[in-house]
Image 1 (cartoon, rainbow, N blue to C red):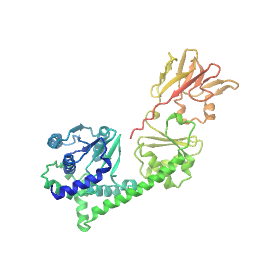
Image 2: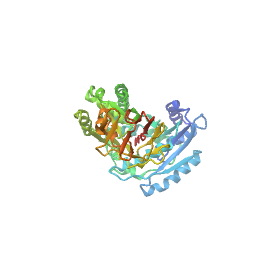
Image 3: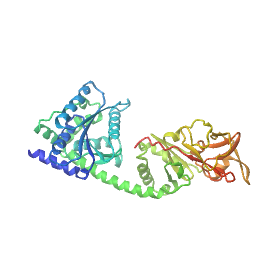
Image 4: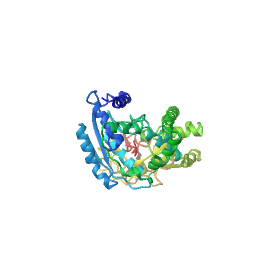
Length: 442
């Protein structure tokens, strides 16, 4: 073996050592220089090393005519090196940023393909890391964004790894030339209208002419910022642990935090904790949009503020903040008669109802609040339902979807609320299993 191959292969093995017990190593294979080198390295290492099963995945965006030939090229390469290939066709949603839309579609395919105990390997290198840092710096990113691309992170049921982040593009080019590799040259990589291409072709050559170590220094800064973000994440975990107090409405299955615990922190620490909490739920807001958090936090006690974010909403109720998304943001349709109360009743867009004990005599039907409802309570007489809900501190976002059990025009029970959810004399209770929260992102 030639020396460059030994050096690069050895470095790759060191990077991947903690992941040698994975079930599968799946290589994201675009057919370009970077992923071709990565695939070649792993295919040849597999001949002498005991590695996990190797497979490759090619995502076909279909954004340009030249791309139609790329799946065939990738298939020929994989066949020659004995690596199975999966070709995934995706639709790129049109939008303001074609780069971002294509990336979202690509990583959506990667997420779906990566199963438990599997690792997806991508071929970003040190030059890509420097480009990412400068690109995000120009967009005003914070510490999280400026830490650029992490070496590894969870992806679906498995993990994503970037084992070449310490390797330069020049090293990859030298390896490809030495081993006579053929790869695809994407014509769009020369289009200066794309921000990354502009940085690569117009900005970095000027920078490196004046400061030859610029890319290495920027990649090192990204690593420092990654460490700083790790410390911020640890602080967020501490703060969130204190804010994750128990609530009498935990049975809703809705994520919530105690507001007073967060409000005691400095403003920067509040944003840090909430950013960590929201990262798995929605795209994080930009700096200007954080005013929505301040409005929600500082609203009067009797107000019902809402902070709307990309994939959901944050509500405030009962001294807590609540994250709502998916079905929780849709008004459930009317239900009607419960013809077989001995069996569970599926509520459209609103979970399931069941009885414990002998169900009351019918005919029974289910309604939702419209206002003005009253309920007869033993030893208390007629009471407004609104007041009863206030007494129990029921969050506002729940009230419109709490199942109400009627017999004729008589309100018999309100699901799950102790003292209102059944009849002690009749020996029955009405139980509601709310819908699973649809997070929208993973």
